[in-house]
Length: 153
Image (cartoon, rainbow, N blue to C red; front, top):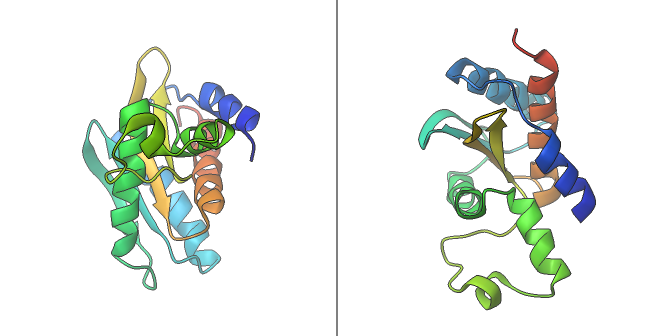
């Protein structure tokens, strides 16, 4: 994963629509991958600031939701994936504190991605926690690409 790839994802993963049933399909798809691979993860999908899907693997910890909330805060503040912000800061050789101030409410690490709809913009956020940060992000992108490939089924 590099900065150019993240910018491409940010501009290309845009859905035609995103309803609550789509959140369920997306969350179910990712949770089924997690179950099949024995990933100890937590998943949260929010739409219009409401939790519409949440999953916690049996061996994951509620602490994962603490990290999810902090990753989601990054997306809420910047309307970009937490990975994109993390890599941008890294490329500038800066910490969040140095550039933006107090980072206590933020986890500037991959694992939260905005959910965007054509002609609307950001309508939600998906976050995963429990794997390496890059794997969290990759699992989200895999899920969003799956949802994108389904179209308006």
